[in-house]
Image (cartoon, each protein chain N blue to C red):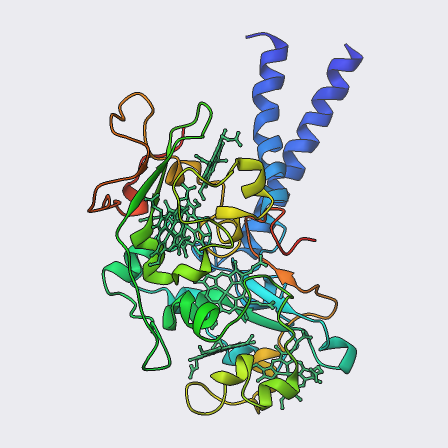
Amino acid sequence: MIVGRISRAGLVSLVGMALLALSLSSGAEEGKKKERWKRFENDGLHDPGNPAIGELQWPGDAFEGFPMDNPDTGNQVDWVRALESGVIVPRTNLFPDTHIEVLDLDIIMDQTSTMPYVRFPHRAHTQWLDCSNCHDHLFVKKSGANPVNMFAILSGEYCGRCHGAVAFPLTECRRCHSVERNSFRGNFGAQEGPGRVYPPVMEQEVVN
Amino acid sequence: MGIRQIAASRLWGPLMAVALLLVALPSRAEYADVVLNKYAEKNGMRPVIFPHWFHRIRFRCKVCHFELGFEMRAGSNDITMGKIIDGQYCGMCHNNEIAWSVEHCDRCHSGRPGLKTRIYGGHETSGPSRW
């Protein structure tokens, strides 16, 4: 009986505290509740005392009109579609004689244990990157010849050099592991072109 | 309804609230921001914050990581102010031609004191810059 009463009193005060905390937090969050991107003053990185902080552009302003990615996923914008749809036109080179190469070649990687196979699209990558950003110091140019595994990726090697650092994070398993094991019929490795056209990430299959 | 179930059902709300509060508290840097602080703070300047998101709207990765030769590993490029003024690294663009020049110290030197040189962001893995 006593135990019951204590826990009841405890419960009431817990509820009270929680409500208070909730109202405090929502009060503090008032006005920026719908903001997807942190303000520099409280992102933990920028010095709020910097006199030039107001001269920096806030991501929310820069990303206006961008195709979105899921909340809290990387920069929260779909960079591949932003580029392909012409929402942004980032420069490919500064020097006029730099050789620009884009390759449309998908590779199916099958060493995925019980996970769906990985489809690596060269096109999305070479629109941003040069061949030498990957070949040959991250991957030799031969499908199946690289001992890629998830542990190495999570420690920042292979795909993890960029994914989890600058490109979309490694929590998005399905964006790489996108090929169902039981319905894929072709050969592994390099695929006949053209490469698969990925849907915008907001329309891609959700991880279960 | 048993007392346990009531307790359980009543507890969920506050517990979730507390959990949400804990989740909401930590502030988060924008994904892929790089802090450069090998020399800055030792020489009386705030750490430098390089925002990837801002630059990749204007330049593809290959411009910096191929043409201009930035190594893809936070902290591995030996960037100093002297080299920047000489037109290397950030100074290849921040030269009053492609972008505003070095006189705007505080736009680059904008970090809180004490930050470590590495990549920041939401989903941190034990990535290359976490040695």
